[in-house]
Length: 157
Image (cartoon, rainbow, N blue to C red; front, side):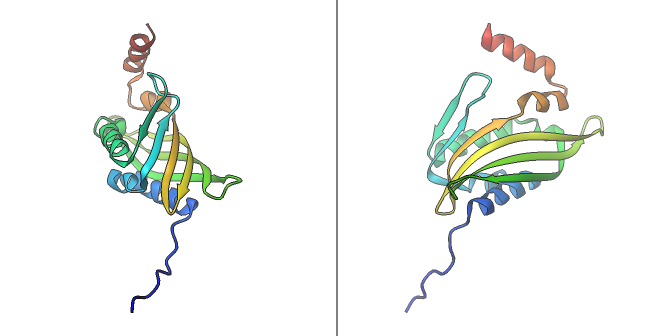
């Protein structure tokens, strides 16, 4: 006879903590694994306008691409902290992520309020994630403000 599954699904706060740990360790696959098969990931403030990815495969492909082309390789993440603001619905919370680390090229320490995520969890997996990323400060840290400005001109001009 099989024993009933007594392990309950992860709470919203537990899932957010897994995201934080994956960010800190640089384990992108662990970050991606938190999404449900039918999840939705959105970047409302993207440089080229709001974007939306639906389904695990689309989200995984997008986040793997972001990781491959990210400024993360120019930075050392020493510590990632998160402040969780629970919503009225226990399946939803707002998470404020902050990264402390070092700029590899200069050895300068930094503190980066990296993003705010509005995250909805169902059955222990992310069902919805609106990601508001601090792109400007990230570009500043890695010496990319000129490229960032050129992208803005290209996008808006």
